[in-house]
Image 1 (cartoon, rainbow, N blue to C red):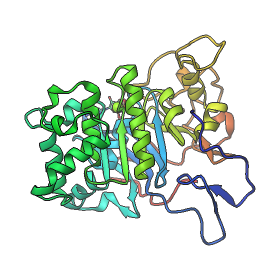
Image 2 (image 1 turned 90 degrees about the horizontal axis):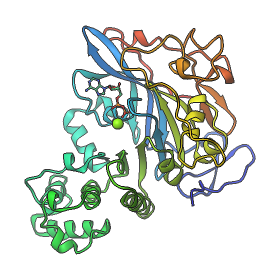
Image 3 (image 1 turned 90 degrees about the vertical axis):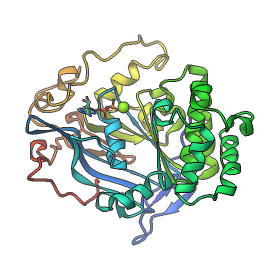
Length: 375
Ligand code: ADP
Ligand code: MG
């Protein structure tokens, strides 16, 4: 049920396509397929009393077409801000200080606001946690879906209503021809989230960013919405950036997972590998606190909380909460150590890698220029 792509070990020079599960060759000169989205060394933060305080720090990841990457971490770790950075919707006084965001090879940071508006909705759709805030209470859901279709030239006034009904049907809203005339408050939480998903699909995006899409829903409805997302992903070949604090959701949905702590991705791995053998002490702590996660083990939450903005401890941000801390941890933040199986981890237990950036330098006057790729 929660199996990944079900691969077995393969020789060097081959990999499994995240989309089809088929082996693709990595012949010299060909390389892996270009990612749909690549985020490289993203640093985003807020101006506070004349000082730039980073909340997303040197974050890099890639998503291939059709792939699901899950961004997981406790509340306050910078997940939503990462999503907002990609969409260029960071609210002032927040801003992106450094890094590159490429979608289909285009640098999103360099697009005009007009071009970026076309990307939002028509290419990358964002689904929020609370559908009520994303839906307009004074218009019917049909009107809102039709408006989206019209703005992006996906329908005419004559065809928009039927397309809206088709979309509601696609997300399994019962009696779509009737529901299309409902206002958001007339729908249950689960149906509202379905309506919002329908709206986000109106323009046929290739990438959906879903920020805690089921957190506000009760457990049964959560499972239904996750089923829907999985089904749509398979039918439409969508790539998904799924943001969640729930490792159960990750296990069900993701191909790869990036674990975020205090603004940084501290570990990234294929889901199967991460669950079988979590490397970072923070990931291990998250696993151990998962309800029903490890049979026979006592449920235990990680002690302490994510440090608030601007109050990162010296060295590795997880040091004060880490049961495995040792001498190097409070000195400087560890950088990425690459491990076998296309995984990476920021932790001195796995190598001496020191982070190559000084966060304080990601200040307004001296934006870091990173165009390269990680690993
Ligand atoms: P997550 O989605 O992982 O819960 P966020 O990305 O929302 O975390 O927030 C990351 C950090 O940035 C938190 O410390 C949060 O308090 C801070 N933050 C988020 N939005 C704002 C804002 N508009 N102004 C100031 N700080 C913010
Ligand atoms: Mg959030």
